Structures are given as C-alpha cells and as structure tokens.
Image 1 (cartoon, rainbow, N blue to C red):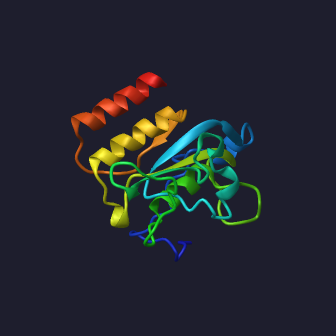
Image 2 (image 1 turned 90 degrees about the vertical axis):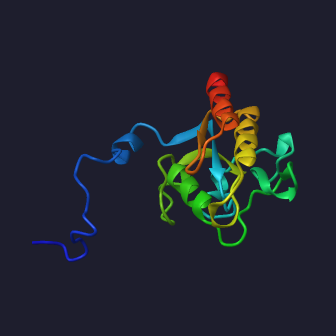
Length: 171
C-alpha cells in the first residue's frame, strides 16, 4: 500500500541513494581532529545538539567559537558569530555536519563528535558581501580549518576564486 505521507510532490527517495550514515557510524563517529568551518549566517553555538561540538578558539582569542564579519567594526567584524534576526541556515548546516549523536536529543549529524567553527559572512536573509566571504575563507584557513563549508550562492569574484585556491593550497 502507498504511504499517505508521500505523494508525487514528496517522494520517499530511492533506496541506496543516501550516504549510508548508519554503516559509517559503525566505523567512526568521532571527527574532532578535523576542524570544519561553516561560512554562513552564523551558528547558534548554544544549541543543545551543537554546543559540545563547537571549536574551542578561546586560546586564540575567539571565545565564541569563531568570528563575525557582518556585525561589529566595518571591515573587521567582532568575535561573536551568533546569528541575529532569526537566521538559522548556518545552524542547520552545522547540525547536518556535527549534531551530537546517540544522545536521545534532537537530531544527529554525519559526525557525532566534531569540531565546528562558526564564521558569519552572511547577515539577515542570507545576504553578504564578497569581501566578507573572502575574509571568512582566509580566517578559517589561518585558524587551521581542514574543511570549509560554504552553502551559499551568488556571483563569484577573482578575490573569492583566489581565496578558494589559497585555501586548497594550504590544505
């Protein structure tokens, strides 16, 4: 019988077309040795499924788990990348990457134990400047991020392409 929750507008997906996370979790759930920077609208680093998996940048002068290039002083930002104005995309992305797993709370990320850096380059409604995105990439690389997630769209610039190439060269 057909499940009434799914119809032609909301198909259930196709078996074997996922990432097989459950099989991967049998092998590894701890990814804390790989710093992942989420360049987006900021992350709610107090969220119960993310707080323990946020990057500890306090020893480097970043007590709030990253940097905010949107608010604060023009061109420099401030050290609090907490989203403002109801922005939730960066928090959603961070949860997909590393929401704490196997805790009977909320959801589960691809990695149950992670090190996630919040780099806020986009403000209300997901808008931002290319200069802030470039500065965010540079910041993530300088702090040792091995993976940079940028779930964003829009025009590219030579500066952004150069920053991505530099990040790739830096590893």
